[in-house]
Length: 302
View 1 (cartoon, rainbow, N blue to C red):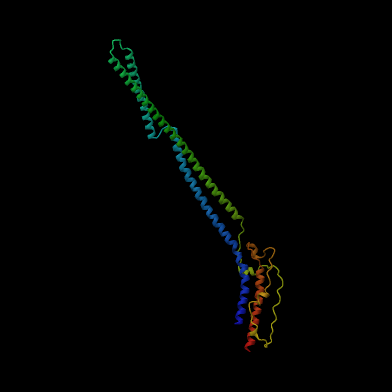
View 2 (view 1 turned 45 degrees about the horizontal axis):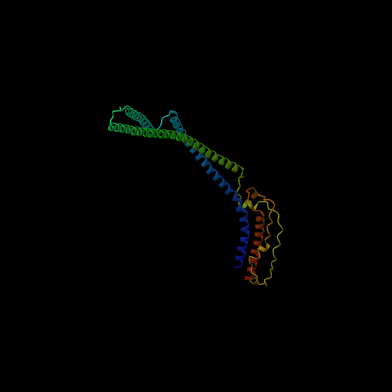
């Protein structure tokens, strides 16, 4: 049982520094993979933005040409044109009606002025009634003409508003093209910056445990000698069990180096080769502990 405990402690002391020295060497590889993934995503985004710009350019260019042709022709939409024509005809008719009403009123007024002195009171009252009716008709014709003119003005304003809206649509079409172009250019700039950043990153070289073991270590203080082994069988081996506390006391404290050396320096890893030296020292001490435990076991069996 004591032999197994010493063996387990030795294996832990040997394997832990080696694992710590090797595993950080692959951190740079993950960074490069993420960078390549980001570049691929930016390439896809730039391609999508470029395709969107081309589609918007084709659509809005055709739309702008159509709108400009409408403005140049001077034609109005059917509904606006029909309203304008109807209002124009109504104004013309109202003008004729008003002119007729004013002519009748003038005749009635002249008739009253021409009444002879022998005209009876009833005839004079009837003449004034006709003049009053002519005045009312002339006033109604004037009101109708004013209404027709307002409708015509509204129809003309509607046509003008339509032209303004078409002009705004032309501006919106051009703005849509400009926005799509700006988005495409921004995507291209982001892609170029990502590629430049990727080109400046060093390519990491994965380091295997065997290569890390052969890396040039940083000098460390000399390890203290292992405790002497008493070979006298009279000593009770069972009273002095080998525990894990024996091994760590003999392992030297790693001293961080000023700069990474060996193969680990090329990977950009922060792990120091000192762990390799610590592992070698732990291996030697662990082997010594195993031999001591085995000899004590043999002496106890005798």
